[in-house]
Length: 277
Image (cartoon, rainbow, N blue to C red):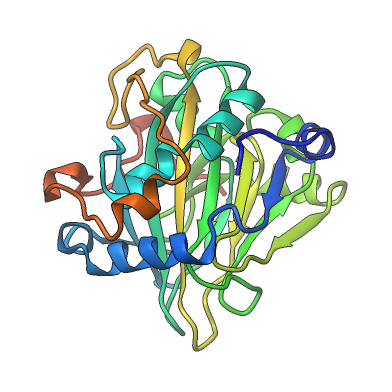
């Protein structure tokens, strides 16, 4: 598929802060991506847990630079990057990608947060940032699909801090007031669906209480003109080499080059370590 939104999708992006694209990646591509992620020992050995307030873990792996693995090619595909450049108003670069794995009956919740609530503290001036979540499995209410607050990107950046458990989240008092005015949508997805969302959209997810796992990959982007002014564990501007949309099928099940591609853990900046009520 060609990158970019239709006029209707662009209007939804401006109004709601997110757009669901069904079958962003087709069944064959998702089968390749799933096989690569399940079989890549470097990725699997880089998984770490981030626990919610009740101690339930979400398993995660994170990588900064998209290489020639099939999930690196997915992040570099024109259908994704061209869309990001359209909505962010110019050249973008890959900020990072991550696997989030909620295992059956054990996968933890994520509290309300904005991605820019974190990334602001990484020396990034403007919220010219966005992500696309790609479903590797069916995601629904039972296994902890993403929940998004319509139009919440218009609220601007919300103060974030440490919540009970190991997570950083948005100020609960302000979130409470926002939810009195703006609706929540459950982003239920089939494998291959992609949810594009602005970095200031409030989102969360419940625990996985089902018998089915919920694995997703998120690819995150920053505008090239929005280069961070401090060095951080996520990269400053790095030229992103796009690939054609048939690259995944041409590559087949291709793993990462080494464990060095992955971060051992995602760390929060010191400014985010304060606890909020």
